[in-house]
Every structure is written in structure tokens, then in C-alpha cells.
Length: 178
Image 1 (cartoon, rainbow, N blue to C red):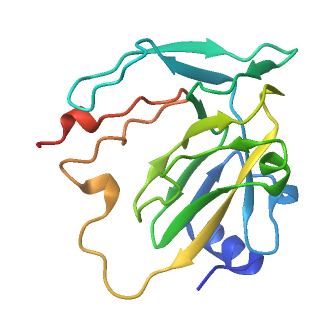
Image 2: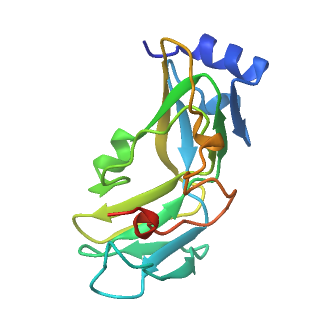
Image 3: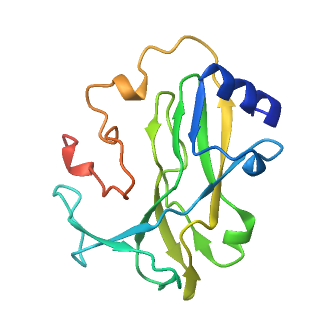
């Protein structure tokens, strides 16, 4: 089941959900709006290799905005740092963002119980579009889980995205054994 606004507020009060900064006006009926941080990144190499550490170049969105170009994968980051200790967070793009032709994630819309960080966004677009730091970019939806949790994300030995950051994080696929 999806948490309602009242249940999200209860979870924030108990510390089961953490959102920093928290703004009550961003709370929807059953979601919380998150915003695009000022940092973007692009991969340095044109061809990416799943077995190697692909380096990224960091960019900062200027006050006048930044024009995303089709055919480029941009890594973005949410302004909000979040923690979830008893629910599964899903990040979805806002409909207004979709209507501008922007996708905010390629495949990684689900977090894990125990995820504690900002969200790296995998941003692409269908035509050039100017974006701004601080603009609403997505919404977090929280799902309840059933049963005990044995393996919290932030306690897993092989968790790759646990270092707190305000910048987008490149793929760590190369850390997997395959």
C-alpha cells in the first residue's frame, strides 16, 4: 500500500522517513515533491564500459538555467536528502516534467529500505529544454513492506551508494563481480 500524506507525516515524526530540507507545501496527497539540485554530471567517454569505472565531469547549473540536449545522459541529484527505515521509496517524475519531454530515471526509480542519501537522477530529454536548480523534478511515493527486514540497504556490505553526497554519483556497476 502507498502511504498517504498523513502517514508520511507520521513516519517523519517517528524518524522512519527523513526528508531534509522538509517543506510541508511539497507534501501531496500520497507523495512528496523533490527538487533538482544545482549539480549535474556527464560521462567523459562516449562509449561506456560496464566493467570499468566510467569517469564523469561535474557541471553546476547557472542561475539562468542549463539546456539539456537530446542524446546525452545527464546525471542529476535531488536537493533533498532522504532516509527510509521502514518503507520502500519510489521516485517518479512529475507529470509537468514528462510534458516537457524529460525523463528523470532510466531504470532506478525504486529505493531500498535503509536508503539514506540524495537521489541520483538519470536525466534524458526528447528535445532541448532548459532546467533550473531548485525546480520540482519528481515525487517520492512510499510503499509499506510486509515482514521483517534482514538486509537494510545502509547496512549491506556491498552497498555501492551509501556515501552521503550533494553531487550525482556515476554508475558503480564495475564493482559487481561478473
